[in-house]
Image (tube, rainbow, N blue to C red; front, side, top):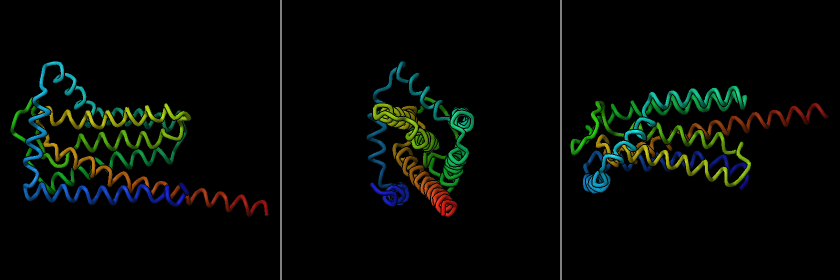
Length: 224
């Protein structure tokens, strides 16, 4: 895969995610996803037992804003102190803060009420799209993106992707299980985050490419 193809992948993902989110938003607006939401909620909440409830509460705590802030601080310290990456640090901060701001903007734009079917925890605010889903997708995807090239083995990279995917999925499912989100809230949250991350990573890679070209040009002119 050439450099131009690699650069185009994030923006393509961003556009596709935007289209997918727009579709989800439309069918939510016109109430064409009620049957899907009800079916998935019935299945997930049908698995309820005391042990699983504890597990789901743990995952929902991990996806909470306070836990995300703590995790983000640890990642920032790791990027700055251990890897000494300043530019990657900016990417991480912009991705996390931008995702949180986008989530609040979308919530107040759609103002979808949370489900009232069977809640195991109580929570206020609007439902669509899920903040936990956006938090999880943004945090674990950008961590995977930043750590990928620092892991030399295929097994290590595969493990990184599997762990990130499991965290994203589990945090999303926990919100459905606990009765505070519709499945469509979760899916839309993933797509909204994918759109934002694709755009941010695209700008990051363009900037990196520009810096690389400048260094190459300076090296060639100094030799000449």
